[in-house]
Image 1 (tube, rainbow, N blue to C red):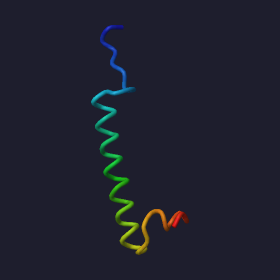
Image 2 (image 1 turned 180 degrees about the horizontal axis):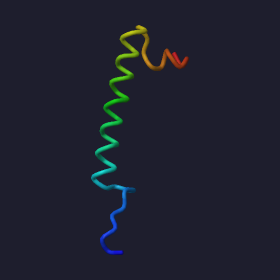
Image 3 (image 1 turned 120 degrees about the vertical axis):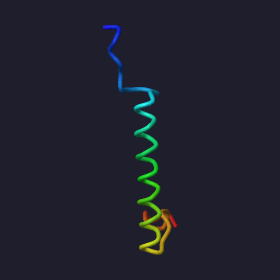
Image 4 (image 1 turned 135 degrees about the vertical axis):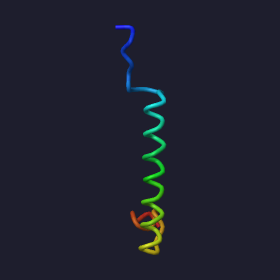
Length: 47
C-alpha cells in the first residue's frame, strides 16, 4: 500500500493537466473573440 500514488489533489500530474487545459481554454476564448469581433462578456449577454 505504500507505493500507491494518488492522481487527485495538488500533485504534479494534476497541475500539469490544469495548466494545459487553462492554456487551451485561453486560446479558444481568444480565437472566438477574434472570429466574432465580440468579447466574452458580450457573447454571453452581460454587456
